[in-house]
Length: 273
Ligand SMILES: NC(=O)c1ccc[n+]([C@@H]2O[C@H](COP(=O)([O-])OP(=O)(O)OC[C@H]3O[C@@H](n4cnc5c(N)ncnc54)[C@H](O)[C@@H]3O)[C@@H](O)[C@H]2O)c1
Image 1: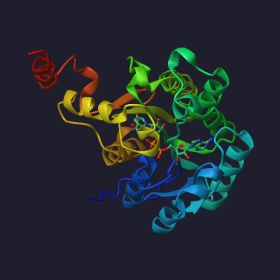
Image 2: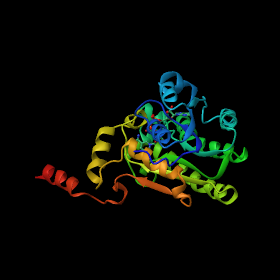
Image 3: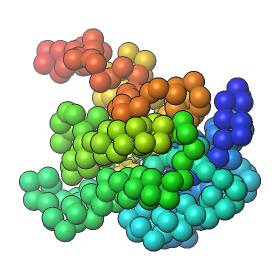
C-alpha cells in the first residue's frame, strides 16, 4: 500500500546488492511512496550484483562509490545535487563487511589489519558520509539520515565477531554527528537495529540459521523482515518523524526486551528431560 509519504523527496540509497538486500527493499518502498533517489554501491558490487535492474524499475540513476573513499563520496553527492537541481532529503547507509567474518577468524584470534578494513567499511564510512554531506551543505532542513545496525552492539552474540564492535562504533557516530547535524542544519540522524535477516551479509555470519531461528522464537512478534525494515525506514524519511534523532531504534519484533520466551524454555526443558 502506498501513502505518498515521500512525494517530492530526493535521496541517496547505499547498499542494494541483490533482491534480498535491505536497501533493495527500501528502494522499492521509497519509489512506491513517491520518493526519487540515486542508487549507489562499491564499483565491484555493481559489477557483481544486478542493481541496474533495480535502477530501471525505479527510474533511478546508478552512481558507483566506495563508501570508504572521500573523493567517491564527494563526487556522488555533487552529482546527486546536480541531478536533482537542489539539496537532498534522505540518505540510507546500508553497508557492512568484516574480512574476519568472511574468512572465519575467531574473535580471540583476529587479524587486526582485517579488523581495520571492516571497521572502515562498516563504521567509519558513516562518518565519512556524514562529514561529506555536512561540508557540502547537501541536506535540506528536516532531512533524515538512517544507518542500519544490529543489537550485538549492546549484547554478546559470539559469532557476530568484530562486526559487534563496528556496530557499536556506528551507533555512536550517529549520536555524535547527529548532534551537530541537528543543531546546525535541522537534520535527523538515526540507526535502526534490525532483526537477523537472510541477506548476503547476514548469511555470512557463522551459524546464521541458528541465530535467526533463536531470534524468531524469542521475539513476541517474530523477526522483522527486510520489507519490515524498509517500511520502518520510510517512516523515518517522512515528515511524520521530524523530531526523532540521535536514536538507535529497534525493529526486531520485541527481541531486545525479552529475557527468555516460553518457547525457548520449552525447548531447553525438553532437551534436559
Ligand atoms: N542481514 C542481517 O541480519 C542484518 C541485521 C541487522 C543489520 N544489518 C545491516 O544491514 C545493512 C545492509 O546489509 P544487508 O543485510 O542488506 O546485506 P547486503 O550484503 O545485501 O548489503 C551490504 C552492502 O554493503 C555494500 N558494501 C560493502 N562494502 C562497501 C563499500 N566499501 N562501499 C559501499 N558499499 C559497500 C555491499 O556491496 C552490499 O550492497 C548492513 O549495515 C548490515 O550490517 C543486517
